[in-house]
Structure formats: C-alpha cells, structure tokens
Length: 332
Image (cartoon, rainbow, N blue to C red):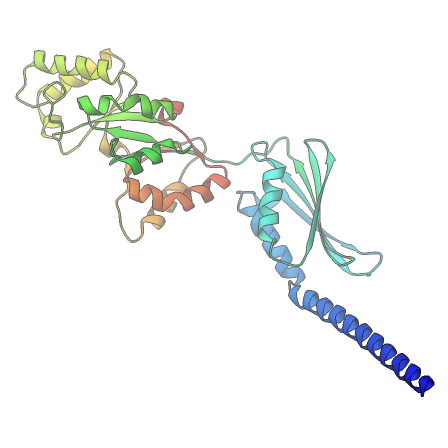
C-alpha cells in the first residue's frame, strides 16, 4: 500500500511537472506568435514610412541615396541608405523623429555615432533579421531653400490673463497695440518675453495725446507724433489702418515725412498678408508659405484664435526649415 501511494505521488508530481512545462511552452509560443503577428510591417511599408519621416524635414530626393545589400545570415536583401543633411538640421533631431514614427511597432531600432558630431548609423531589426540600415552625414554644400515668416497678432488684450500667457510662451510674434496710457504699462512685459510690438494708427484711438484726425493742424499732428515716438519708442513699426480717413487727407503726407525724419517705419495693413477666420484658413496659410522664395520674408497679420489654430501647421513648416522670426530680425 505504501509503495502504491509513493508511485501515485510520483505520478502526480510528474504529471504536474509535464503540465507546467507544456504551459510554459504554450505561453512562449503564444508570445512569439503575438510578436510575430504584431510585426506586420512589410519591407515596402518600412521604407515608405522611413522616407516620409525624412522628407517631412524638407529634404530633397537627391539627398537620399539608396541601394540593396544581402544579409549573409538570412540571405535576404535589405535597403541601405546614405542620407545627406544640411548644416541647419541636426542628426539627433532627425533620429528622434524616426524613433517617434516607429515607437508603436515591434521593431528594434539602434543608432550609433560613427564620427562625433558628423556621422551616425541607424539600423532596424526584428529578432536577428536586419531590415534596414541608414547612414546620416552632413553635406557640406547642401542647404534647404527656405524663407522666413513673421506673425503680427492684432487682437491681444494685454490685461487679459489668457493673452498674457500667450505672450509668455517661447513663440515669436509681434503684438499689435492700440496706443493708450494703459497699454504703455504692458510694454515692458512684452519686451521681457522677447516679443516685438507695433502700434496701430486708426480711428479707434480714443486718447487725445495719440489720436489723429484729418482736421488737425500740423502742430497738433506733430505733438501726436512726438508723444507716440517717445511713449512707444521700441515699436518695430507703426501700422496705419487703410480704412482710416486720415490716410486720404492732405495731412497724411506731412505725417509720413515727420515719421521718416525720426527713422520710424510706417506700414499700411494692406502691406501685409491679412488672414481672416474662414473654413479654408489652413489651406490659405499653406499656399502663402509654399510660395515663399529663398530668403524671402512674409509678414502675416491674424487674430490670436487663428494663430492658435494654425500652430500645428506652423510646427510642420518649421520642420522643413521655414524660420519664424521677429519682425525686427529682418529689419522690417
């Protein structure tokens, strides 16, 4: 009886051990299949997404060289890239973008710096299989042909908390200010956060020190100019509303000449690109940017709501090399 019990115990122990091993094998097989199924990225898809990530930086086709090599172990062909980057685009920035593109894929991505600050290699693998290899090099004579954008936001309320938070961001833009005693108090805040400001000459100016009218004498106009030039001395430029009656008066030429004597730049609103809230705002903005010439500056006047709406598009264009500048950086 004792021997029978011992045999029974041994049988149960061995059966439990076998079941445990089977469960481990099943679990391992399931995991392997799950990983294998998760990696459903074809070679063509991998190359398409990889090249798309590169081209989002405005790289030209001829800067991407591609050939095929054969894996000595698997005997399979895989693409090998040599990518030339312009000096204004760092290799780490490009690598980070590629990592983000493939972060949800079951694929191993490894990067290695071959030459400090000048050459890096990137590889894509799954298990022991090499899927893609790329070498990144700075091209000495290549550059992205891009222009510059400046934004002038026309309706920021300087006393508004949300608007002040916008000014505190690292974004570069120009704040269009209506001259008033109250707004003078906010000018140091604008400058502190590295923003430009300009003043808007229009019929909405209510304070006598800064308001203009076609009926004013030249002496009164001169006093207004002196007040504006002193109280808003750091303005990037003065902007006059095209719909303001003063612009068609006999005194406007005198006003212009007196500003010129003081080296104050006067612009009309119509000198800029005026964007308005509309259904195709993104499309209109994109068309203006795509028409930018090499080194050209376009100044865009828009509302804060439209600016915030366009920020995703602005970020995408910045990736291609478009520079967002303060108006003063280009002597505008």
